[in-house]
Length: 196
Image (cartoon, rainbow, N blue to C red):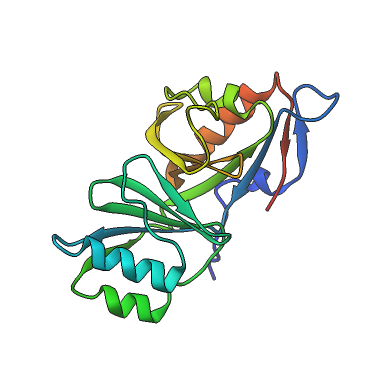
């Protein structure tokens, strides 16, 4: 019988790479069981859909580009006009009341099998991201609650910042390439792998 397998087995083992002394400049956590839905309100229903999400999930979807709103369990990221990505670090189901309320008002696409979530923290996170992506991730220009879509190490990703940490939503099919790039580019800072 087949069973689910992680695309990154090494991400589940605590390890330290690169500069061995002192506090690591980068700490990476791979949220292998993250959940992701793409929410696309139908024309004329965006406000109603946003109200439903706020009522049943506790987070009001952002109404402006490059923004993210979050609770302790879930983040809602603006990914385009009339489009939000809803991401949880762990496996979770949307409330039945929300699913029923969205009927006829929005398309809801489960992307959990195709996307994975990485979390970066540490004093060198900005320097690491600057090696592979164009936006200025300094907290003065990319404060908490900010999101960006773009290419990181030649892969299409969404990046957002919450509580001083950076989150990367990436294609599952390419996560091994991105993981190895992140580890290699973090060696000069000292990088710690911390399983979730």
